[in-house]
Length: 393
Ligand SMILES: Cc1ncc(COP(=O)(O)O)c(C=O)c1O
Image (cartoon, rainbow, N blue to C red; front, top):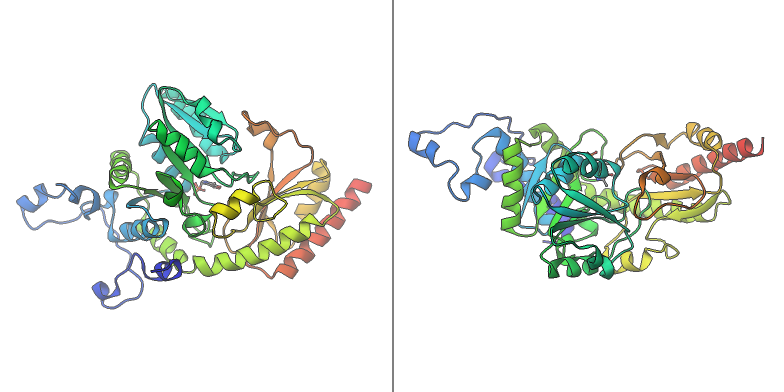
C-alpha cells in the first residue's frame, strides 16, 4: 500500500467490530481471564509486548495507533506515550544508564534539553551538545561511553537540516544508536529507517492529531529488539496514553496527508512572500532554494510541512508586539501542526551552547494553518504596517 492508502487503512479492521468504520474506544484497566492457567501465561513470549492484558500496557485503541504509525514510518513496532515530550524522554531513557554519554543536537526542542540538563545529569548521564550542521566529523565527539546521538531535523526554531545518513554511518561504526525527533516531517515526509535512524519519535500532538486538542507521543523502532527495549521501559514506568486521545490521534491521522498537502502549498506561498518583504532579513525554511538546508532537504525529504522561522530586521520587542498582538489569524501560542495559524517568539541567544546564535534581528516562528493563503498574507501585510509605524515613531 502507498502512504495515502496506509493513512486510511492501517490500524483498523471494521469486520472485527460489526463493520464499524472507526475502531471503537476501549476503556480498560482490568482485563479478565477465563482460568488461572491463562492468567499465568498472560505475559509469556510475544504476549508480553503485543497482547491486551492490562490497560497500562496497551488496549486495542492504543495498539491501533502504535501499529498505524509504525507501518507509516516503516518500523517494526511502536509505543504510544502520554505526550511528545514523554516520547523523547522515554526513548532516551530506554537506552542509557549511569556513566553513559549522549550527543544532543544544539537546535533541539528546548524541553528535550531541559531533560538532559536536569534528570539525565542527576542520574549520571552526561550530554554533549553538537552543532546541527556537523556530520562526518561528528566522530570527534564520540566517547567510549557514548550510547546514542539524538537528532531533530529540521531543528526547532531555526530549522537547520541535519545530514542524517552521514551521522548514522558514523554512529553505527561505533555501535551508537541514532534517535530522531521526526515531528516536523511526520511519518510521511521523512522515512527515518531508510536513512539510518534506529528510533523515530513523533509528537503526535502536532500534525498527526492536527486539531490542537490533545497531547500524545509515539516512539517507533527500526527492529523488534529495539521496540521491545522501548516497550519494556514504558511498561516499567507505567507510561501510556489514554484511549480517547489515541482515538482522536487515529482520527486525525486519516486526514493528515490531505492536510499536509494544503499546509505545504500555503506555506511555500507565504514563505516566498515573506522573503520579498522589506521587514524580513531571512526566512528559515529548508524547502526554499535559498535556504542553507535546501540541498539535503531536497535529497532526503518527500515534502514540506508548515512550520518555519523568520529573522526580522528589527530587534524591537515593542514593534514586534505591536505587529503580532494585532494579527487577525495568527494567534500567539505554543505548539504547531493544527488547523489554525500560530506565531511565537524565539529567544535563541539564551538557548544554544554548541553553536551560538549571533545573528541580529528578532526571530519568530510561524505555523501555517489551513486558512486561505491570501487572507494570511493580508494579515501579515497589516502586521508589517504596524511594525513599521512603531519603529518609525
Ligand atoms: C519538535 C518537538 N518535539 C517534541 C515536542 C513535544 O510535544 P508535546 O507538546 O506533545 O509534549 C514538541 C512540542 O512543541 C516539539 O516541537
